[in-house]
Image (tube, rainbow, N blue to C red; front, side):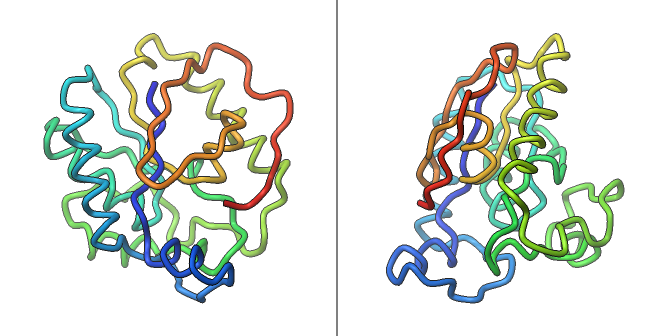
Length: 185
């Protein structure tokens, strides 16, 4: 299974410069983020990917779409792999708004409001990552799955901090990290 962190978002660009929450709800990718998504599509073209699981945040969907188009696969949108709710950027877009913005993606199974109402404790994110690990490990073809997600979820799943556009190959049948250190990126 491959975990891909979304490309650089408007939030990432400003937060990296100021270390302050710039107050952007569900940010889109920057031009660099779009380049990172296109590079990921090229890098993944040779992989035998059969399933693309994606967070409902717009930055993750924008990152996944070039891969999906190149491989001719649909996106499976699931909030299980969403970012830890901790900043303004982690307020999502309602299902109806996502469906208008991305008409080629199926959102019918998604709740209208799918993100939590308040900051999410680290142990809840780690619990979500553990649940997703178990769900993926139960599949016979987990090795053919791409998951487009976020810094916090990938950290909870692997114990590793990844940069925008970075990929990690993981085996969900192996136990997750013993400890997750939540230092912000």
